[in-house]
Structure formats: structure tokens, C-alpha cells
Length: 128
Image (cartoon, rainbow, N blue to C red; front, side):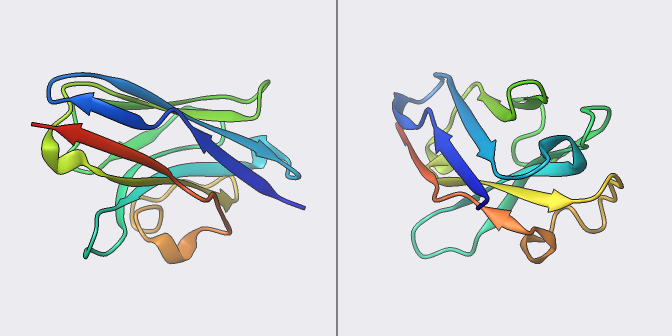
């Protein structure tokens, strides 16, 4: 049974930082690209960042580029999202997701439908 469990969300002031973690189990983690998505109230789920199975490539949404960093530790079956210079508009539920395969196409990894497994999400609230 595959499980993705996010943690690290919370309430932070604008300009602050948070680091999200996503621990995976029940799958061969190193054979999956990993992504982070977010969904704000009343809005569709949107792509945030993704990382190749070996950490060799990553891709970010323009809205977070330069502020967020995605990384992974295959020995710990964990993917991270370091979020700096947070803004009120970053407030959302953040989800991690796993996409089977060693390829990494920015044409596909930005689409939620390409992912095979999802976590339950963690709330991030940024106060202005």
C-alpha cells in the first residue's frame, strides 16, 4: 500500500519560511519523480515544483521560482519543499505526489493527472 505523508505545514508571517516534508512508503521511491502541488480555497490545484527521480533536474512554477526549493533524499524516501519569502498568496493546502518513471518532461510533470499517488495534504497559512 502506497502512502505519501506530508508534514511541516503551519501558520507563518509573510516573509517567513517553512519546510515541508513528504515521506513515502510502499513504493520504490527512487523510480518516481516527485512533485508538489497546492490548492487554495475556491481555486484549482496548481503545480508548484517537481524533481527527477535522482534529483538531477527540477522545475518550478513561475510564482515560486527563486523562493522555493525542492529536494529529495532517496535514502530516506522523502521529498522536501523549502519555502522562503512566503507571501499571503502562498496560503493553500500543499500536496506531494509521485509519478512513476525515470523520465522528466516539463510538458507532463506540471499536470496533476500525470501523477500516480497523492498525499493527504498539509495546510500552509501565511498571514500578511
